Amino acid sequence: MLDSGSRICCRKCVIQVLRELLLSDSVMHTVVSSVLARYSQLHVDGDAFVASIAEIISDIREPITVQQQELGCEERRQLDLKVSGCHGFYRSGKTVGKSQRI
Image 1: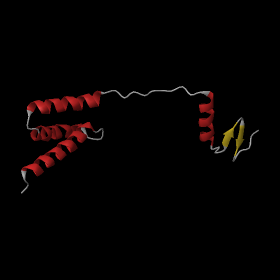
Image 2: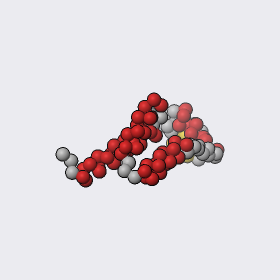
Image 3: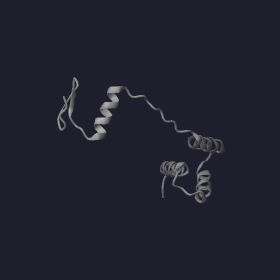
């Protein structure tokens, strides 16, 4: 038999696993109602449960933004060198290494 400290710890771990399931993209929608039912049973305080669900919904709905950064001429050239497989060193207009350029 578990003491109350262990039960609280176990309950928190299960709550965390259920929360991750609710946030996961790979969980089928048919399972969500069952996970949500167990999630609500493990919350002692109703207000904390509602706040937790609101936080999960907020995390799901939060848009993912991508920032694009303009590359300078030198940065673009370095990236092109990496992509093309040239692993030489660039110093003042000359590439030294696999491909020789003057």
